[in-house]
Length: 518
Image 1 (cartoon, rainbow, N blue to C red):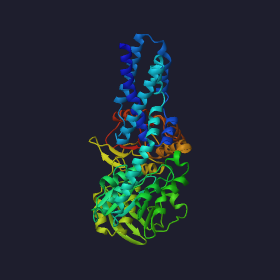
Image 2 (image 1 turned 90 degrees about the vertical axis):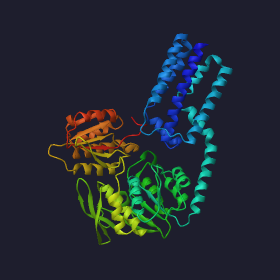
Image 3 (image 1 turned 135 degrees about the vertical axis):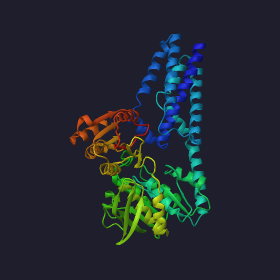
């Protein structure tokens, strides 16, 4: 009897750890079963099924003292999971709690039936349901009608709130990259004249926008800036059907999330769902430096303005750009009229492009040049998005660790390559490469390796996911093998760096993989 009690206590601990992990990764994949299944098939998930399957096979042959040993191993597995620190922890929303409670009730029902009908095999059956994420996915299926009803009620409530604010100006911001930075810069500039609300953090899905409207949008707000993210065709349209923007910015079209989009053309079509949704008296603002935007005519019914640094026919062009270690200055050429004296503490061509988009919307909403310039001087760098910091030891850190992509990485490497540094100081890149690029992932990471070779003196390749492709790209460019460092994690890379850094060195952190990648 005592051995049974020990086993079931250990089982509860293991169940909690396994289901918590499954729900966490399900949340990582936006509660989309197809995305979760794709991640599970491609991830490093073979260890758990093997261990638990081994328990299931050997359980009937165990003596009582071996049952205790098995319980200890189960406790150990559970403890390792609960003490693991994730970059993006599980958010215990009401949906998560409903999922966990349903999974618990389902598990208890299965075990109760096993104890009643086949008591000798109940432990094996209990362990067997943890081999694959069957319990969590079954609980999600059972909850689906309830979740749909709750989502529909929240959606209609958000629509009601928006209908009650007929004078609200709504600006949509989307793009393969740059949308979060553009949202923040636009918010700061428009706040010089208006009471502005923007979607916080990464609330860029339909549910995130609904939550922002219901919890944060108030009658005194005059402008609502909505960041719109997408991983598949139709995602942007879904948000536009809710908020009906009058103005929209497309910051870029690039090779991101190709596992779900399948092609860059699908990415472009999805991002331009925002432009398609604008009214005839609206304003579309698009980045003409993005080759996938400029490559073909833009079908639109609203007014359209383009912005760029390299694209000479853009309506808004940044010219006379001057970089110093502390600030960037530039002028704005608007259809031949040059507006001088824009200054920012932000670094890089990408940030200038994001500021140009904000200027175009600010002009449309009547924010004066003086107000724009004052706000721009005060804009703070956004963490992990090409932020520049200097350590007490004189090392400069360029942090571009958030959600990297091929085009953004080229811009970050451009900043590193031209960064002013003392003689003898080294340029160092730390990166795990890009993910979610489908069949193009290896090729694009190999190209990243070649770009790194042209921009730095030391390359630190982190994690296993893209190690081979990046290393091959470095070798293709004849980068010295002695200056390539391989690390299994950012912690290991940081420990290696701490022993090598000298005053004056410049380190670029380019991307940081989510917890679901190794």
